[in-house]
Image (cartoon, rainbow over all chains, first blue to last red; front, side, top):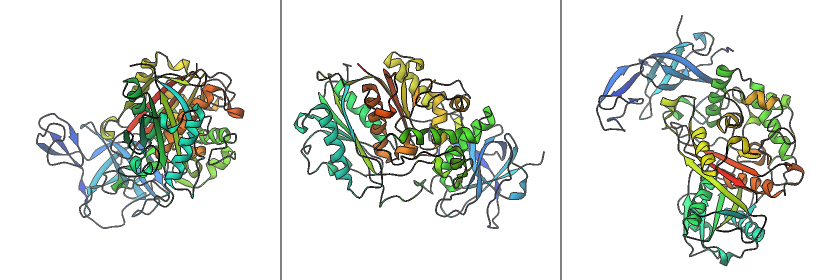
Length: 124
Length: 375
């Protein structure tokens, strides 16, 4: 089943490719990237992991405070690094959403909050 | 551990109540004690489950009661708080720390929480605009894509549970709804609509746990219980192993297989929760939950097991801290053969399965499964 994604940010902020932290001690993969590995206290190596496959999504029609519905949340299994991340679709023009679609993931940061992740379906 | 029995149960209707949390708790506790012919003086210890009542909730609630001075433990395990409280009570009794323990669940949301239960905006998923119904919608979409489940399958859960609650005088909603009505209700997080989301409610529930059946044939034996917390979502994705793992442990402790279960109360905070539970509790093959439901399973009068005869969270209402022991109330009532028009005709083994989560980065905060047997 496919449906048109609903975006997205209305702010004109620079977005950077998603990066995760990979622990040099135990190999665990973290996003957001903490100062130290919460499992073994090892140091985390920053690594860009900005592509993945869409494994689930939902169009949110009833938004929590601070958000304006509708928008589409997606779950992306990142290529190579073995974790999934949650983000919002950036623009409605990214093409139809379907299971396993290749997705580019970018992020930005607003204030002291956790990073916001922005998704776009990649042209195949 | 020695045998443990649930000898008495009580609960208020779930609704938007004007009554205070103290008054709700007193009503549920009075009923549970009357149910087994005990007096407050017979109770050795109290365990209180609540998700939102804050620190010291039990001491605050019972400060003017005859339980002041008793050993008291507060349990906060999100929406599984009061089935976790029951687990704690059974541990006390089984270990010989007490002979009679009162387990209580309570929530008074009116005046505290309006609409969506909050996901903290400093949470990494909360920062993406995640809501709890959206979380369940993501579970639903994955299942749809993986197994061909349709939006209608999830909606059928609401239709079934609203139908069951027509005969439950303690339920928040006692009117049936049709499939078209469920699907046409306000979209919340696609594919979920408003009637697939449980209503925040107020209420209290209680169970009296004892080391013997107190000579009564209405006592229900706790055959086995298990508790687990969830793994990180980033690593498990949507495979969600926790309920399957916890249920397997509870079944093993009880010495049963899923095929032995006659009746179950499961966590349908949103409709996908129940459909996924069919598979994870071992009632349906992987991916077959929707088609089994559509074929008539899990309905009153259908092939066993009967699921959510009390209407589930969707129709009974959801005061988070009180929900777990309301599930227990329904199972005990069914196993006693006292459920009236919603009674299933074969009820020897019943289970409750409760999921509590407000840490979205984990699959669940707490998952509790209890297995009960009629005498």
